[in-house]
Amino acid sequence: MAQGEVQEKMNKVIDALKAAGVKDEAILPGQASGVTSFQSSSRVCNPVNNTTVCENNTQRLSTLEKTTIIRLKTKDESMINSVLNAAKSAGASAGVEGYGLSDASVAEAQARQKAVENAKENAISMAAAAGGRLGDLMDISDYSLPIVSSSDQPGMVDVTSYVVVTYEMAI
Image (cartoon, rainbow, N blue to C red; front, side, top):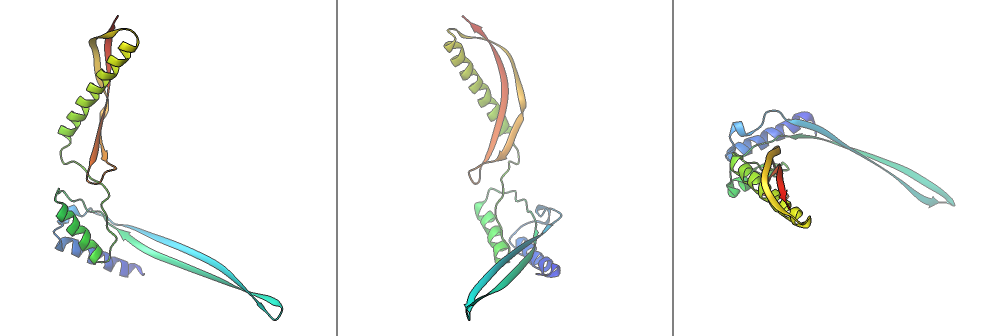
């Protein structure tokens, strides 16, 4: 497909996305282009009059692709499906690549709280294994900022927090 045809197809897809309710600001600027090439070779040999005659056949296929990213800020699954269907109806391959949080502060606070609780449970277990008990909290700090990432489960995100907690051990 020639570059002009590919751009025309991309324009058709973007028009379909807008008709499905995607706002201009949700379509990220810039489009990526890529060329995929594939070459196959085969050799067919057949006996002809007590000799073997071989024919070589080589085929080369190249495709030009354009991609664009849209960022939907919605929880509405029917809206997401509508946008995906609009893109596919316009001839595009479309899929959901990731999810994010518009405000991660609550999830980050919950992740940090859980990390502190886990650290305390581990410290209690280690103190008991050493024949003692957990003493006073001496120090606590974030190992890093909470990390928000796409989950293995569709429609979910993972928020991870790392903390370092130091306790006194009483014997």
